Amino acid sequence: MTSKANIIFLKFIGTIPAVFLAAFLLLLNAVPSHADIFKYEDSDGVIHLTNVPSNPRAKYVMILREKRVIFSRKIDITQYDKMISKAASKFGLDAALIKAVIKAESNFNHQAVSRAGAKGLMQLMPQTASALKVDDVFHPGDNIEGGARYLSYLLKLYRGNLTLALAAYNAGEGAVAKYGYSIPPYRETQNYVRRVLDLYESYGKSG
Image 1 (cartoon, one colour):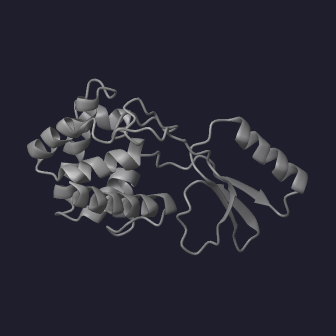
Image 2 (cartoon, one colour; image 1 turned 90 degrees about the horizontal axis):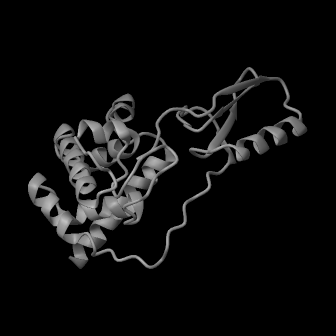
C-alpha cells in the first residue's frame, strides 16, 4: 500500500540546461524517494515532473527509479498460516488470497515499513490502521486481521470484483473511482494486481 499523492510537480519553461537537470536529479537522490519519477513535455514546451503518470495523452519518460527493498531469501511462508486461516474464516476470505497480499506487500516481514509509512505484514497506512482499530500494526495477528477486514470491505464495496478490490488496496478507493471503476493507469498498481492474482493462484494450488 503506497502513498497516492504526487511527490513532485514542477514546470520549466523552455529548454532545461543539462547541468541544471543533473543537479536536480542529484538532489532527488539525496532525499528520501517515494516512487519512480517521470517527466513529460506538453504542447507549450512546459516540462512536468511527477511520480503519478496519470495523463493518458502524455508520453512519459522515467528519469529516476525508486530504490527497491531487497528481502532476505530465507523466508518461512508458513509461519503465519494459523493467523491467516483464522482471519480468513472470520471475514469470509480465501486464506490463499490473504497470503498472496502479504507476500506482495511485505514478503512476510512483520516489521516492514514502506517509505510512504505503510507498516506490517499487510502494509497498513496509519489512517487505515486507525479506522480498522488495529492498535499494534507490527503484531502479526493484529495486522493480518486488520488487512483481512479491509480486503473484505473492499470486496463488498466492489461487489466481489477482486481486481478492483486489489487495485483499491494498492492505489486507494479514490483512484479506482477516478478512472471509472477500473484499474488506475499506474504501472505500480497494474503490476501489483497481476502479481497478487498470480500469487493467489499459486498459493491456492499448493494449499
